[in-house]
Amino acid sequence: MQEKHLFEYAVIRVVPMVEREEFINVGIILYSKQDKFLQCMYSLNEERLRSLSDTIDIHEIDQHLQAFERICKSTNDSGPIGQLDIASRFRWLTATRSTVVQTSKVHSGFCENLQEALKKLHTQLVLKPVN
Image (cartoon, rainbow, N blue to C red; front, top):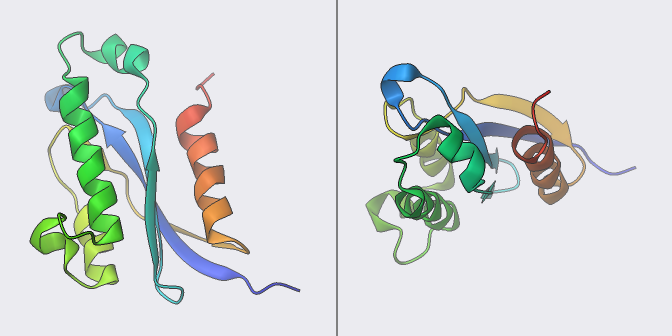
C-alpha cells in the first residue's frame, strides 16, 4: 500500500476588475512540506477572461503566472521571493492580496501521488466548465 501524502493547495484566480470581485479560476498551486514539493499549473482561457473584461491584458496575466512558476521552481530569475525556503514561497504566493491575480484560501488533502493530485485539481477546478 502506498503512503498518503499530506498537501496544501490554493486556486489561482484572475480578477479582471477587483472592485467587482468576479473571478475565473486559472490555476492551482500545490505544496507538500514533507515531500518538499511546490508546483503550480495554469491554463488561460482568453474567451472566458474576456467575458468578464474586454480590456484585460492576457499577456500581462500570463507574465504574472509565469512568475508564480519561477517562484515555485526557485529558478535563478525568480527574484528574492524565489530564494526563500519552500514553505515561505508557498505562503507568499498564497497571501491575501487585492490584485488582478489572486489565490483562494488554502485547502488541504491527502493523495498517493502529488503530481497526479495537481493534475486532478487543475482539471476539476480550472478546466471543467461551471454548470
